[in-house]
Length: 309
Image 1: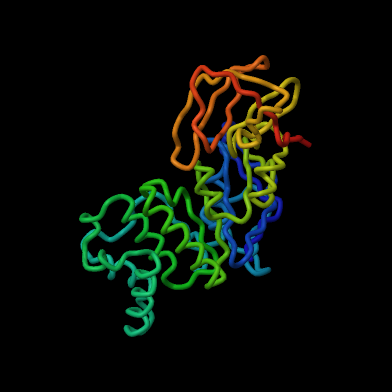
Image 2: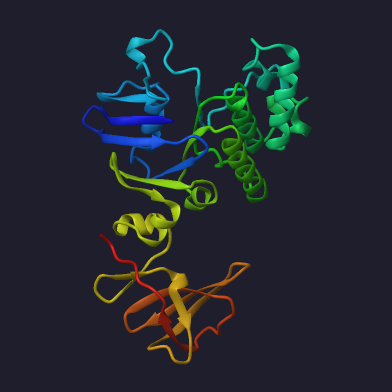
């Protein structure tokens, strides 16, 4: 388990991380979400032992992690950070890049471990290639595999899915979640894409201007957001009358519905249609499994409202 206790950090007068207490459990992925400048990546680098906190401490399995000022080489050997920067060695193969992290292990184990990670992250066709022959998404997958090679206790990911197409993204998300669970790794993932977080993270940490606004399960944060910022960050929200908010999927089209609206836009999304209605209370976003007719009036109800703390 990785735990931060009242961790703070400042960068001149432009940014400060307020006291952050956070726990990453073994076998779980925690998503860290927030707008640009909210402190997500700074927090990740602090947890990795790569930045010097102003105060507070970080503990790994109850033992304090040395900060950069107390080490010749910053970081911790059992905490791995993966960013979007390509750090692969350009003149050796992908298999050799992954195996480099295992250079102090015997060759048989190196081969077994590289092959296991290649299967899990769909890298087997790439093992004999050089980094320059790979796409951005493939390089990202290799860097994740390399970080996992020597079985870290903690894996920190900064926008890990940013360069992946939708097909590969879903496969890698499921595979990575399985590796984290099987190997009991404590994992945190920074992302701007809430759907990446929902697809992988059991818990979400919502940040804004250096503060943690909410730390809860993905379901709790989506259905019971603490405030409007959290609600809008985690999905679309409608405001209905004064201070009443609801998600588009809460709209139920029914002849007995107490409200009515005129369809202004219909967008096909594969599994459903996104609908925009003009109502007496302003525009409303809704979802429907059936296609509604543009310009036609429909009656509807609202299944549930969001209540902020």
